[in-house]
Every structure is written in C-alpha cells, then in structure tokens.
Amino acid sequence: MTVPETTGTRMRADERRALVLEAATQVFGERGYHGATTDAVARAAGVSQPYVVRMFGSKEALFIAVLDRALDRLMDTFAAAVEQTDAAVAAGDTETVTHCIAQNYVGLLGDRGLLLSLMQAFMLGADPVIGPAARAGMRRVYEFLRANAGMGPGEAHEFLAMGMMLNTLVGLRMADDYEREPAVRELLDEALPTKLDFLLSLRDAES
Image (cartoon, rainbow, N blue to C red; front, side):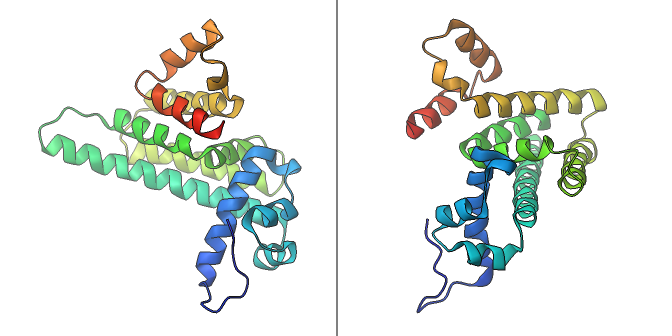
C-alpha cells in the first residue's frame, strides 16, 4: 500500500486519511496499542512518519480514529443485516435478524485487523482516553442490538458472547491447528458450522 504525499494527480485528503487508517488498523490489530508505533503505521502505508503525525497528531489519536472506523464498519454491517432481514420477511422468508447479523459479522473475519483492533481497544478500559471511547463503542453495539435489531437482553448477551469468542479464535489463529488438533477441530466445527470453509480459506491465503 502506498499513499503519495505529493503527486501530479493529488489524492483528496479524505482518501489519504482512509488509506492511512486502513494501514493503522492492520498494525494495531497485529501488534496491539502498546506494540504499535506511528513509524510502523507509516511504513505499512508507504508514507513518512511525520506525515502520519501531521495527519493525526499522536498515536493515541490515531488509535481512537481506528476504533471509530472499526465501529462504523461494524454498525454498517449490522444495519445492512437488518435491511436484509426486513426484505426477506417481506418476501415470505423466515430469516431471523439474529442469524443475518451473525452471518454478516462472520464476513468481517476477512479483515483481521478490524476485529483485532476492536479487541485491543476493549482491553484498554483503564486508559483515561481510550477506555471511555471503547466503553462507548460497546454500549453503541449493545444499544443497536436492543433497539434496532429487536433483541432481548438475553439474546443480545448471547450474540455478543459469540462475537467475542469468534474474535478470540481469529486472534489466536486457531484455524492453524484445525487439521492436527482434534479439540480445535471440534471447537471450530461447533462455533462456525457454516463459515468454517471461509475461515480456513483466510488462513490458507495468509500462509
């Protein structure tokens, strides 16, 4: 990925910002907040470190921007699932919103950095800046499930628990042991009965 700082056909500021945020999402997701640096983000984006600092001001501000981007993508995915469910029901299908949201959420597994950066944020509750932003993000997700997806408290709890487990499986790269560890095979078969092939294909693409 290369983000030209000055070119004959200049990129718009929002396009440059989006490309740097995409690179930062991958770096934070893989290295964590404390392990990542603005220099590593700059290298991943193909720009200079001062350019990243000029754009975001600090690593903390960059991480908050990554968190906001991840939450926006998550909410867009959930909103699309609600629309799909409404269309399916109108056509006489029996599709449930919970199933549709879950299927769309699993589709996000292809963006490891996005889901793992969310996990990184959720581990920083004690941070005076990132903690409140992460809690607000979790509250935003829960409120959407209750108000927009029509889930009851118990159903929302079960959905969030499954989502956190899927994030953990992805972060641990459990699919790497699928063929050689019977317990891992059993766990993944149960957790991803319809999307296991997708997860394994992502693993194979990264190897």
